[in-house]
Image (cartoon, rainbow over all chains, first blue to last red; front, side):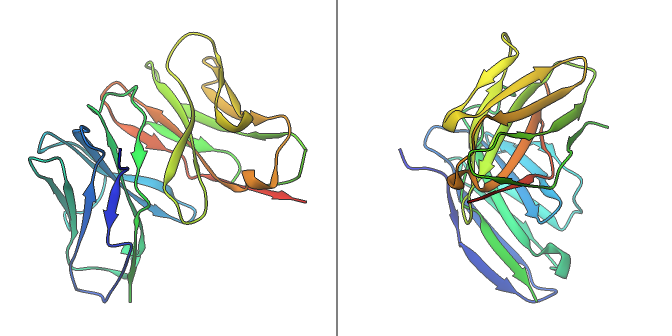
Length: 114
Length: 112
């Protein structure tokens, strides 16, 4: 079984631009979660999607949005990029998103905002 | 507010020494507890998890963790570390609303 795939692996953008990140979960997994990882802050939860619906949302501004398609693939969008958005963005999938299920992580997209 | 605290941001140890990485969480309800490891330039992978039952949980690569409900802690231990254990370790807590929160991470550096 293929693992969680995130594309692109690296991105360089400038302030004010927008960016879209993609995540393909493990086949059969219907829950996809997104996290922002920065040094010293650990993983900050962005949002979780299940069956094309946002089920949970973290404390991020509205510039951060996402969606999920019928094949469970998910995209995350950040508009009007700021320098502080530079981070590793991790996607993780679970079969149904139940609390006792482990997360399967992708390798992440490293976003640099200049 | 629900939170996960990893008490040490960095832990340097010598090879073959024992190590303990500490994790405390805040919750008045039942939770599920996890430890994940992140090797350089990789995503996170599960080390072990506590769902219920025995409070001592054994995971991969010789790691184990003990759930202490009264102290709301879930500390990770290994009796003898190897160079290859150098990585970042994350404690995570899952709540009944399917929300999973992570600690800030502990960078374990094993020296020869």
